[in-house]
Length: 280
Ligand SMILES: Cc1cc2nc3c(=O)[nH]c(=O)nc-3n(C[C@H](O)[C@H](O)[C@H](O)COP(=O)(O)OP(=O)(O)OC[C@H]3O[C@@H](n4cnc5c(N)ncnc54)[C@H](O)[C@@H]3O)c2cc1C
Ligand SMILES: NC(=O)c1ccc[n+]([C@@H]2O[C@H](COP(=O)([O-])OP(=O)(O)OC[C@H]3O[C@@H](n4cnc5c(N)ncnc54)[C@H](OP(=O)(O)O)[C@@H]3O)[C@@H](O)[C@H]2O)c1
Picture 1: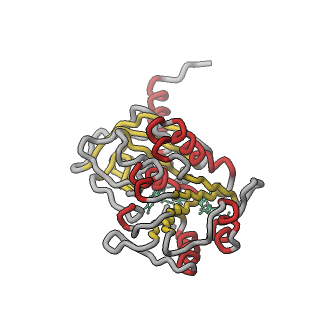
Picture 2: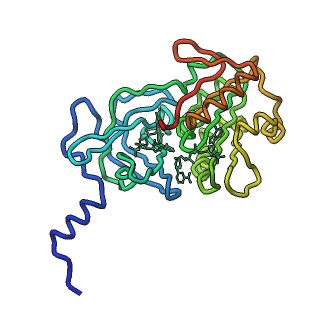
Picture 3: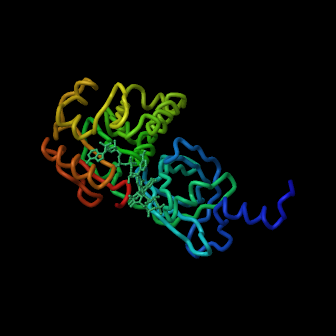
């Protein structure tokens, strides 16, 4: 068999990997990918360097991007690492033919990822009034902002109990969440701070699993409270954060409002806050 011509090899490599951000747009950080973990055909996590001077609050999102054919493509991404971390972590979907993620899913250590300078978001502790128990309701990649918050000591200073719910279609999609819990348990400092305050409630909707069902149904029929051994939602003590599809936000919000909780925002803290995990 003939060896491929050198130019063929270069072209094959060029189409297999995202183009490096040779020209970095003004006012944007260009960071180096440090590690990439693929969970399923649809999900992966990556970590990259954190720019000196880049500050954010745990739970916020930033615009990240790649140079594709000479132009930057940006998308909103929750920062999955906590505010104290020296690196930045992201948990990503792989959308077939998605303008950004068809390229982002191929990044490798050493590649550059762009990030706009200003983080923002509503899933921050400051947007909630004081309470005892914090629920974080997530579906799919909606777990990302909570991956940040469950690793932030401030969460445990403000709440006596933290309940992370994560619902996906399939069991394999829950793995990132289980890895996070394991990481916390194995971290000397965090495990001491978190103690037994953090509960992880993972359910699936399209496969057999010991815990099944949409979070909305589990709130409606009370199974989540029985399973966790906690009382039903009470606006006097319970606070909530929700991150998922538009439909999941709407339906979960309705459940919290039915229990008497009211929606807050950065400039008007209240009993729960919401943010879309994706548009569409
Ligand atoms: C505030 C905010 C925070 C976000 N944080 C994250 C994050 O942490 N991780 C992440 O993977 N995405 C996140 N997204 C979605 C992200 O901005 C992009 O949409 C996603 O990376 C796909 O980009 P794309 O260009 O490949 O496809 P797009 O053209 O952006 O999306 C194409 C279609 O794919 C579906 N889709 C997009 N994103 C998702 C998703 N996350 N889960 C399931 N279906 C999806 C939708 O149907 C969408 O219409 C966030 C979006 C918002 C608004
Ligand atoms: N995840 C995959 O394996 C997969 C594979 C191929 C393509 N995609 C595409 O990727 C996109 C998003 O898929 P996704 O699985 O990440 O997100 P998703 O469709 O938002 O589903 C994630 C979880 O949220 C649940 N859910 C959906 N609507 C809800 C509501 N109104 N209230 C409460 N829970 C709700 C789903 O339950 P239900 O199962 O009951 O809907 C599922 O368990 C879709 O366009 C999909 O076609 C996903």
